[in-house]
Length: 622
Image 1: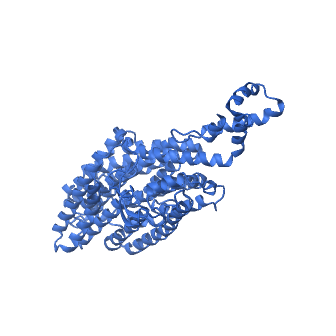
Image 2: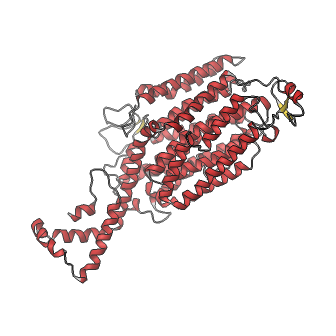
């Protein structure tokens, strides 16, 4: 399976190289090659999905180095018998956090290729080549188990999308591509500093002084780090909080979080339909995946210390994105701002720092990719026929294209979190987990769901229902001037839109699987949660373990008093047992310290420890 995982990752890149070498004037061969490669990649991804074992917490499908027992194969390595050198490895694997994002990438690439089937007529081979190269970058990123390998794929994804927007985008495509590139590059450089800091801290203060770049090893090692300042997060300058903020800089831009979201609407509007599908469906999840894997997995106390800031920005993003979407008349811009709002929900669920909220956030990453990818594909169908996205220039499209109207309405209702569809099973756990962390935050975030339903239903009413009104066409589906009313100009409509074709086979193939999953997840989400929860449960245990260690560092005195009482002043176990009856009637002088000890012990007991381990307070009490 490790070989199959590697083939799945690099197969699209091989297809991209093949497209660059194959001569193709009319683009037909390029389309077929791209579709064949994408279907083969999806088939491999489904095989990995079926072979995945939900009961296993750690990464699966990873090749193991027999000499060292580490994940993957040595790339920039050292002698296993010599400590202190770097150990950078080519290591791939999938766990519950990355599995469905891996499969989602393969699925949405089919939708992206189908959406470009007729709309891209210039430099077709290059267009599909960049799409497949972008797919390899995303698959490699989600499967990376080495922090250097992760960063390489993280940066690599910028290049294909930069050219996709800059060459095949709208009128402001150059500005959009440069803005996107500069924003993400600046943030990723700060993230690189944070990644280096994590490696250095682990190397200096771990017990075995190992210079490792393995993500699983760093996660485990940092959680058990025997360095007291690492768990002191009372100030912004503390090591863990500072590293948390460096990591946050790059991932927040990728999400994107308010106020570093300003590159997203322009990039969405100017990108070709395929670029928008991949950007909204998968690339935004790179930011939330990084927050989960690094910020929560490796710096959980920093996440806890910054919760008020992150929660406030997430709620602002939810409400701001929804209100701005409500003010749009361009359908694509409306969907773009809805992404800002929905990604705010995901961030809020992650930083609730409890099992329910994190499970909902991971589930919502998948759901948002499905619904938003479908919405952008539907908008692409409309634009390809009418060359306008203005809701003021069209209405009643249900009468002209009922199948498209059905797809658009189902995707919109899923995005609005209608019970029975996929959005509900993600956003509801997020709100429950957020309420446990901060009731006020959850209540404010819930207004985003109401506003989301409002602008999506408003868009459906404007575009799909009412009297048929279409932009005038020139015989090729290129619309410019709207026709006022179907009731007074029916003969004009028949003439103007007689050439507007129904949905083609490629558009149905691209949208139908997304519609099926939108319904399937909403009706029966249990298999998805079963595969997600082992990995999220491990992260929650790491958070709780570091909380307990931080509490023990801050409250050493109560532990010492319990030990002196339990030990009978060094008189041995028998003496301690004889002294116990005297504790039943404490003197007034000892009453207050004893009460304090009892209170502190209860607080410590409230913090869960690792399974099979007793806290130091419990050991001292014995």
